[in-house]
Length: 114
Image 1 (cartoon, one colour):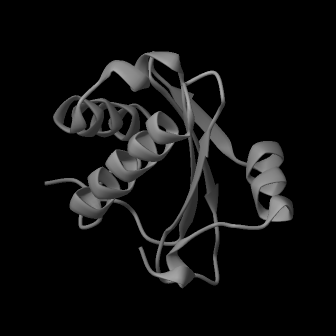
Image 2 (tube, rainbow, N blue to C red):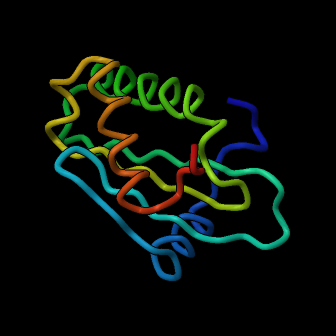
């Protein structure tokens, strides 16, 4: 993902946690914060050490990034999304992660209508 499409700073994460809306399922928690002056969406990832070792955490992050990349046409622009992976995400393959993220985004009503 391009640098301008990522949330990196702790201040931005904390703002999303405090002011944003959250929605979740068993595998993921997603915080969504509306940004009026932004024409695109940004993604921030958080994968805890509870998920597994560094190799497992990086694999989960790669799967999430690829799933978001494939869903990018459907996501509403102008938002920051913070995705937090829960423990069951470590046992999932890419297609299950994509399906689960799609479900969470539908729950949060941040997917465009088809």
